[in-house]
Image (cartoon, rainbow, N blue to C red; front, side, top):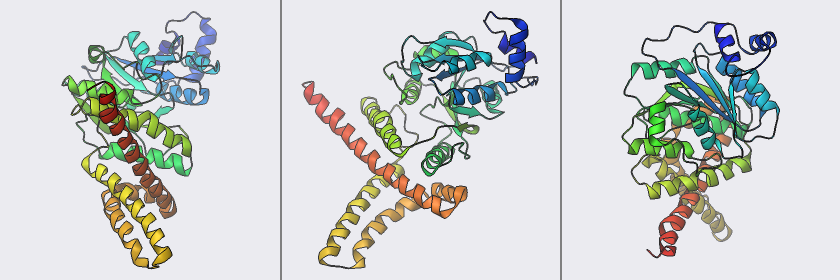
Amino acid sequence: MALSLKHALRGRKFDVDSELRRATRAVPSREPKEPPMSAPSISVIVPMFNAPEKVERALAALNASDVEFELIVVDDAGTDPRSPEIARAAGANLLRLAENSGPGVARNEGAKHASGELLIFIDSDVVVHADTLAKFRDLFAAEPALDAAFGSYDDAPDAKGWITEYRNLLHHYVHHTGPSDATTFWAGCGAIRRRVFEEVGGYDPYFDRPSIEDIELGMRLKARGKTIRLRPDIQCKHLKRWRFVEMIRVDVTCRAIPWAKLLIERPGTGGDLNLELAQKLCGVLVVFALASLFGAGLAQVWFPSPWWFVAPVALLAPVVWINRGLYALFVRHDGPLFALGATALHFLYYVYSVVAFAYAQLRFRVLAPRANGN
């Protein structure tokens, strides 16, 4: 109850009895466990834009944590009045941006008002596990030299559907197989020491919509010699429901192209969690397999033979082998039919990623220097 009352009393004027009853409903009555002696104080920062149902679940999960923390919610000029009301009821210090500026700017604003030594960023469509905050706290207490860390989505997506489950499982797998000494950062469920965040200047306000603002921050952290840890055991659940066209649009315009641009502008500075050589090879092989499949189809018109299809199968075989762990996860999750569809989506991902990368190379490495007279 001490934690509930603490959250309810944070920085607001109100009737004590009514607010206490509201806090009692919103926050489970449980005492925080005793933290390690060297544990940093925590500020949790949640950027939000509408989506009140998701915000309510995200904040309820945070308040159910066995950890003392300061809760800061930043409204990115949302238009739904219910979300701010939910944030206040959860005991949050509610801030509001004058205009929609993107989650990076919202997180920066939250950090300006934070008092904790450790900033934990949680997206408003993310539900933390009961031990998520405690694991971050204990990790930074155990490793005083650690500057930043991030976790992973769990393997049980909240929303059902072929595309949504594929997307969440792909993210889960990448984070569970990536190197623990990371060269990037993830703000969906990530933590950074406040002094380090201030030292590097926070998120770049150039990114005025959800994009790769966290990856860019990770690249600057690595360029400054900071340590970033990937901890896939620190998990959360993603509430987002993906649509097919939206998936491709976000991957291409909000991630692949700006990511490729960053890698061109800042080579060797990190940001390559899922860009290892094997994955680049897979992208090339899938594109060649698609081209050879098209050629085999044309060849069937004049010279019918099943042998024309040997080439695309041979090109895809190494891709399947390299990604066998991911495809096995698809099978375990929902059986072979789901795995077949998810694998097809993964092949499609390789195709449009290669196209986006080629476009970025042409635009930013070839055409941009010529336009600037270089």
